[in-house]
Amino acid sequence: MKQLFRRISLKRRLWVSFVMLTVVCISVTGAYVSVFFASEMKTQAATTSQNTLNKTAQVFDERLRNIVVSISTLMMGEPFQRTMRDVQAGNGGEYYNRLSQLQTPFAQMMLAEQSIDSVLIHTPIGEFYPTENWRVGEMPFQDTTVAKAIGDYEGRPWNTIWVRGHSDELFSRGREVISLVIKPLFDTLLSGVYVVVNIREDHLLDLIKANLQEGSLKQKLIDRGGTGIFSSTETEGGQARPLQDYIGSSDRGHFEYETASDGIYLVNYSGLGMNPDWVLIGYQSKKQLLAPVAQMRWTILTIMGVCVLLALVLSSMLSELLLKPLFKLRNLMFKVEQSKLDVRFESPFEDEISQVGHKFNRMMDQIGELIEEVKTSEQEKRYSEIKALQAQIDPHFLYNTLNTIYWKSEMEEQQAVSEMIVSLSLLFRLGLNNGKEITTLRQELNHVEQYLKLQTMCYPELFTYEFHCENEDLLEVPVLKIMLQPLVENSILHAFQALDRPGRLDIAAAANEGMLTLAVSDNGSGMSPEVLERLRAGMDGGGSSGGYALSNIRARLSLYYGHLADMQLESSPGEGTTVKLVIPMQEVREA
Image (tube, rainbow, N blue to C red; front, side, top):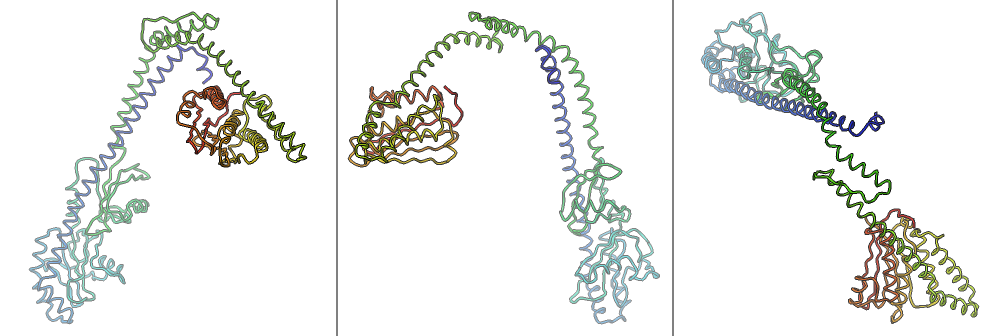
């Protein structure tokens, strides 16, 4: 496919590019819009559902709280307290009297909270309940669902027990109720005494439905294990465990829930304050919620098809119009290829292609200048190379070295003579470097070391020297040859000759952010600010050898490294001088 695309003409490539760009732009825009709206709809639905659910949970909690308050009011009344004192004393003789006294509080409680279907106070001396309710005699209390729920809490501390929806087994009405079991409020703990309040399930269901907004949101009340609280609510069965994993112990939140048959649902939940084990959940089908997004995607596909047809028609015309000046520029380049350097581009427009044509004209004007500059640069380079070779075989240095070798041989210092001959041999071998201009930092430092050995033997006790390299890996970095030796020679000739203390030379190599820094420092006599400024400005030193060495090195650095290289000169009178060479740590072009 790539090879086919490369073989077709530029005009065809533009045509294909226009069509592909149209398809990609519309596809990306459509995908972003659909994903954005789907995300926004899900977020908005989750927020709205959560607000509705929180409102329903608040109303539901308020109703349960009112029921608990009504029961507490009953238990704090004098008739109930007298009854509890009889239970404590085991006095059953006042049973009917206490039953009669409790009828008024029973009636007031059920009148105040009409969701209460029935109430029963179970005690060892008898059961107390509103006489208007007909107690089912064949169903003992210990066999009821409420008693079984109490038995599940045996051995555990509790004050209230909420029993999920079931048929009322205590009274003849047989309605579906949710039972609340409360221990009596009394001075001492009474064993076997329970206050059972049956709350009408249909009233609580109506309470949930009354707070539902129009739409697909449905609500149900479950426990944290996923089991429905109302008797009319089906148990989740195999899906109970996933619900428990999603809800856990948190008070509220939302998640996506996938069922085996009905698809994915967006679920919100809110815990109840009166019974933390109960959770009110709201759920709605994700497919139904995002149905408008699916319709919008089909609309985007239709728009994409129309735009592709338009792109097919217009792209050919546009490519022809756009490429006309480009073809003209191509023909001019063919002429330049035939060595016709006097051609120029002309166009009445000021567009990008015309700007390229003007750049082409400027390039052609500069080609001649560049050819002359290259010739001049090559001449300067060769001149600097010759001067560098001359620097490494300075006749004064060679004369002094040979003279020292002669006198040491006369004095029969054969070891010193051997060392000087070896150093001189290495100095020339490393300087020549097989005719190559590029060497390694290791060889450059070795070249300087041989030079310093010879100078210390020629001028004993004049100076000492030391090398510093922060990393062994730097020794393999490629550098120009004979850069450090002229700097060291400057220090020996100009810094130590009139020094009244032992001289010291430090040659250091360090790297920082891809740049190699080579520094030559001495503790010599330094130079005045005027001389320092002159050397920095022209690097010619007024024709002195020191200034010539610096200018020669700077010229070589500029030729090989361009603006990436730098030479820094620092000096203080009476304290010394430091010359730093900063070059890039990269392969350089060979001479």
